[in-house]
Length: 310
Image 1: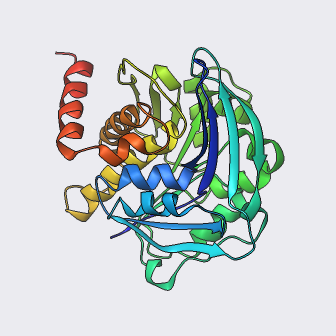
Image 2 (image 1 turned 30 degrees about the horizontal axis):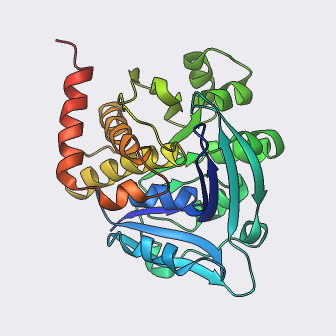
C-alpha cells in the first residue's frame, strides 16, 4: 500500500434544491477521497476527529476494507469539523451556511511511522502550511498532488506558492484558477500555474468536466452524463480519489514508469470522472458503500466509448 491522503473528516448538513435536508452525515475531503481511491488500491488516511464523531460514521469508514485508518486520530474533548451548505437550482453552486472548524484549529495529526514510505501522496484541501508539513514527512514520495480552495488563495497565498514549488500536480476549480492567477481563460490560467512549479494542473469545471494542462499537452474530458444528481458534495474529492487511485495502482503493478506522464494523468482523469459520477447519485457515501467493481468497469467502458473520436 503506497497511496496516502491527508485532509478533513467532517459532519455535514446538506440542503438540496428540492427541499431535502440531510443532517449530520459523514463528509470531509479525506473521507470522499479515501472511499473513491479504495476501489483501485489500498489508501492510508491521516486525519483528526473529535470524540463526537458518531459510531455510525466510523462503521461507514470500516465498510471500505482497503482504507487504513491507523492515521485517524480521535481527540478527547475536541469537536469534529462540521459544515453546512445549500445547493442552488443548478446544483453546480452552493452557499455555505455554517462552518465549525473544531479539530482543524488544533495541531495537525502526525504521519504514523508505518506510513512514511508512501510513494503516492494526495494533499487534500487544508491550509498549505499543513500540507507542506505532511509532504516533508514523506521522503519516499514519487508523485504528489495537492488540492486547494479560495480561502487559502485569499489568506495564505505565499504559503501556497511555496507548496506549488514542491508538488507535481495541482487540482482546483475554474473559479479558484482565475482567483489565483487573475486570468479568466482556464487554459491560460493553467499555464500560468505551471510557472509556479507543478508539472500539471487539473481544473475542475463541475458538470462541464475537467481540463488537464500538462507540460506535455492539454486534454479536456467531459463529465459523465449522470441522469439524476442527488448531492454533489464530495464530487471533487471522489474525482481526485479515482484519479490518484488509478495512478497508484498502475505504479504498484509496474504498468507505468512515470506516474506523472501526460497519458497516465489523462487516463486517471477518466477514472476520476467515473467514480465521481457514482458519488453524486446519493448523499454522503451511501452510493459508494453499495458500489461494485463491475459497475465501475461497465461505466468506464461506456465513458471511454462516449469520448472516443474515431
